[in-house]
Length: 114
Image (cartoon, rainbow, N blue to C red):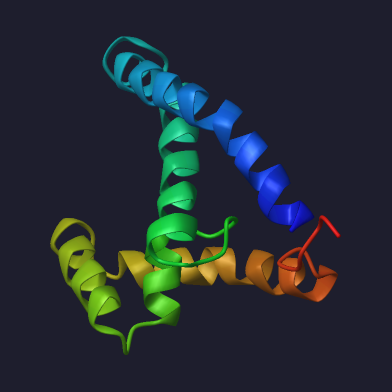
């Protein structure tokens, strides 16, 4: 129960900032430095993976799709990204899997508020 209450309070503060961040990301993407835009897109990618695809917060949608490539949604992601960059998801997973393994070994996927 404490975790749900804390999550509600954090989300109450974070959602407005996330919306503002998205608008800023749009602006930076057009007019700002590409490194800042890239970092924002990467964070948004991880957010989408964690919320929409029930993945790890430290993993991209592409890497998660490669791990779950037998699932229908993952096959769609792989097919779309292959049209843009061949073997994108496989390469993303190869790059990110050591990080996923480390986070799981350290228990960072477990509940933090007791």
